Image 1: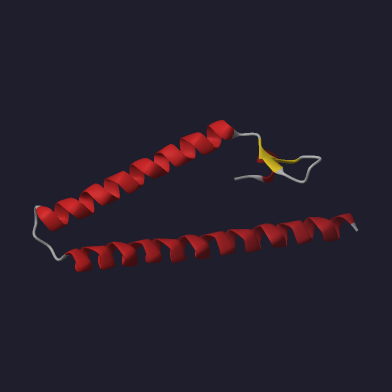
Image 2: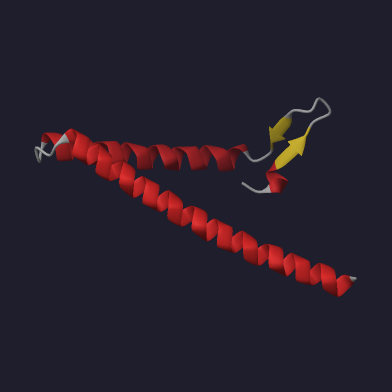
Length: 92
């Protein structure tokens, strides 16, 4: 989410302006989770795979994806920070 999607109220509570964005995001996330659960159940019941192995494999894939995403985010933020520093130095 972006900074502009939040507003600080006089009471110190952060209100979200973009409820439509959150609603669509959470619905998409629910669909992905449902599909992953369905795939795991199918592998265990239909393909007779070991349930612990299926869960471990799915957790490993999720962890790898999370690490990859964090690395991408870190690199992107570092580039943005460098650009911001360069713009600041050019102004002063």
